[in-house]
Length: 346
Image 1 (tube, rainbow, N blue to C red):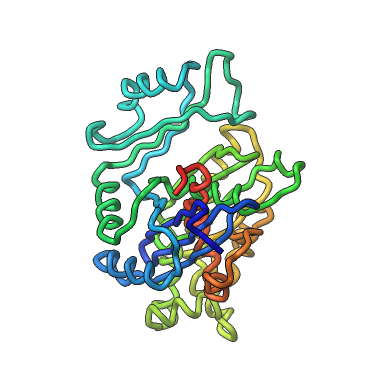
Image 2 (spheres, one colour):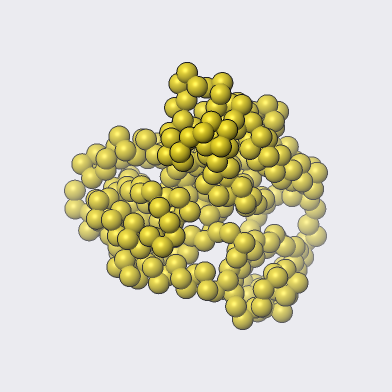
């Protein structure tokens, strides 16, 4: 397989507890997974070293990457504005942005884009929906510095919650009649949880909750007197300790479920739309029984989903067994790699 003749992009998700990477290569029939890496991150100071090791071991064929930012330095706003051309919108947003972001405009990188989201309230004929995203420049600059030191060439800097939606659109093939359904994508990371409500390829609402699987790990360690590594292992494979595990994490799970449910209720009350299903991903979603807990808390179908979906895997280049072991963690990385279909050719 002559990969250089095709367009490849690595989706690189640098989290707080692990670095995840997926390489997609576009061939005639569509994207193929041609590289994969997952490496635990012992501390933020070890990011560069861990990334370099992941790149050596991941079997990647390109140094072009799409990465993402998240956290309190990132602001996402859904606006209603007068209908105008893209150029006029970019000029107008500079005069309006102070209303929507709590940072000095000179300290941020921002972008805006009109989007179609039928059913989200009534729009006048001269109005349009606009997505505004801003991030502190220092956060992006630090990310780009690390990528440069690792010998990578960044093509895209995205936002975690939107990469999550992009993975869903890329990897999941759904019947046409499912297009009207509102799906809640909930990605439970170590220190944060991304929520993206999507319908027919459009992101209707996003939120980042600063709570995640780490709270469950800490609860297990404290309640059961375990070391952190032991608590992490027990989260995924509790075996005979299942009931003890459930008791240990009950409070942490309830706290997270409450935050997610408040987001759902806000969306449903604001736009008079119901959420049809909840789809879980992220390392924290591997907690035994979490889908059942959330299903009860949200009173709607809740289940894990595979962000690699129906994507073919180049078995000669990818450790398929390792990918399957970590597949729940890979949604954001897959969504970032899928941006390669819109990036310039290698």
